[in-house]
Each structure stands twice: as structure tokens, then as C-alpha cells.
Length: 137
Image 1 (cartoon, rainbow, N blue to C red):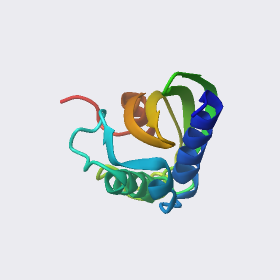
Image 2: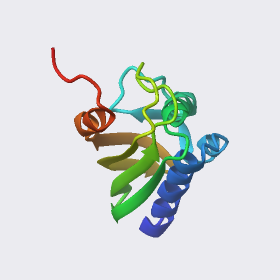
Image 3: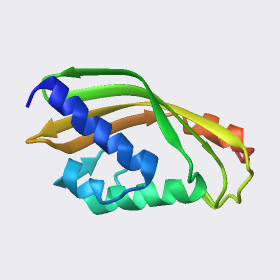
């Protein structure tokens, strides 16, 4: 596939996160998909669906802004800002009503039109601080 076609797969993946339409998972994720950032997550689309559902239960209106997206070979990388309002339980923390911005960068490997691997780096500490979660011991 071309780099532009791979980027289109990633855009569709982000649409799944932004809309909560988990049916997209089977379309864009390989059956043996691996998220290297979350080794505890079940492989394949089911693990991603669970992750999205969990995040969206806390931030049901969350959407991504892609700041940069580049592709090389079978890899697409993008830097993002995910914005949403904390309206539900998240990580055991009750809703605060606060608007959050979670920033990060993802690298995805694509084969045969499906995402097969993900490496992600997100500023979770900053997210916790925005929500007023206790930090440290």
C-alpha cells in the first residue's frame, strides 16, 4: 500500500476513537494486532475496543487533533492532542467536569491495509494533574 493509503487507515482508526464506533476495529486492525504500550491489553481488535470504551466512558466527547502525520514505508507516525470533558469514571476517579488535553505521539505499522502494531507515548502525568488526581505517595 502507498503511504497515503496507510495514512487513510490511521485516520479511520482515529475516527473510531473520536466517535466510539467500535465496528471500525475489524476494518482497520489486524486479528493479531499488538499494542506494545499496553502489554496487559488483549491482542487483536477486542483489546482496542475495550481500551476505547474505557476511555470514552470517562471522556465521551473526546476527539483528536492531529498536529503532524508522517509516513515512511509501512510506518505512520502522528503527534496529537486529544480533548474532552471528564464526564464519567476514569481510572477509578469520579467525573470532575474538567476539560482535558492529552498530548502524545503514536507510531503504527500497517500491513495489507490493517494496523498490526502500535507504539504510543502519551503524557499521562499531565492528564492526571489536569484532573486533580493525587500524584506520588
